[in-house]
Image 1 (cartoon, protein in one colour):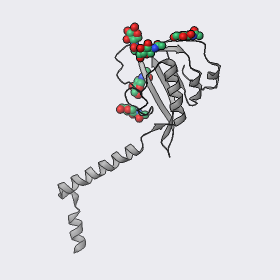
Image 2: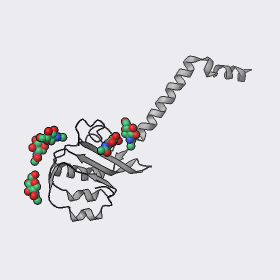
Image 3: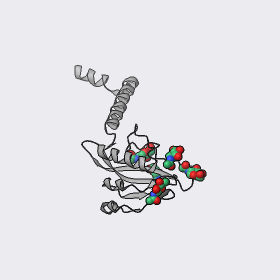
Image 4: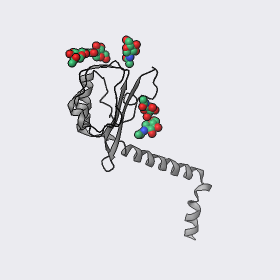
Length: 151
Ligand SMILES: *[C@@H]1O[C@H](CO)[C@@H](O)[C@H](O)[C@H]1NC(C)=O
Ligand SMILES: *[C@@H]1O[C@H](CO)[C@@H](O)[C@H](O)[C@H]1NC(C)=O
Ligand SMILES: *[C@@H]1O[C@H](CO)[C@@H](O)[C@H](O)[C@H]1NC(C)=O
Ligand SMILES: *[C@@H]1O[C@H](CO)[C@@H](O)[C@H](O)[C@H]1NC(C)=O
Ligand SMILES: *[C@@H]1O[C@H](CO)[C@@H](O)[C@H](O)[C@H]1NC(C)=O
């Protein structure tokens, strides 16, 4: 008898409000999970990017995590031709959700200075595009340790 009552009570399809609250509970649970899985860049690579940014006069916003995949680190709307601005992460540690920089594309940004050797400290970097800037100097010997597939 009471089992039947309980079954009726939890027949969610016949109780729109219960159904709705279950749905809301589920979506906020999923939302929490997503936020818990937000990826961040490993600390030492944040410092490397800060050094590179200061050497190239590139004003990245470090109040936002470089792996956040948001505007400033990844620009989806490229209003100007021959312009691109993307920092992409990968090789994430699934337990800590910390990642490495795998791609840096800074195209047509009028960046100045000498090519920073510090790119070589981003050990998982496989793509580097610095075309259409005003960079000078020679390719640092240290870059020899990088395993770039696109330069
Ligand atoms: C660095 O960039 C700022 C604007 O972001 C510019 O005013 C300044 O002249 C640049 N410095 C160099 C050395 O290019
Ligand atoms: C970055 O964000 C875009 C759109 O907001 C999404 O399509 C893409 O999958 C995201 N990439 C990563 C690696 O999270
Ligand atoms: C930059 O990243 C965005 C979002 O992932 C992508 O749509 C765009 O093609 C990338 N631009 C370049 C030049 O790779
Ligand atoms: C680079 O400089 C050119 C010429 O001064 C200018 O038209 C362009 O908007 C600049 N690009 C960026 C990304 O600042
Ligand atoms: C590179 O350009 C900067 C100015 O943007 C200058 O101070 C520096 O001496 C130049 N270096 C070389 C090796 O030409």
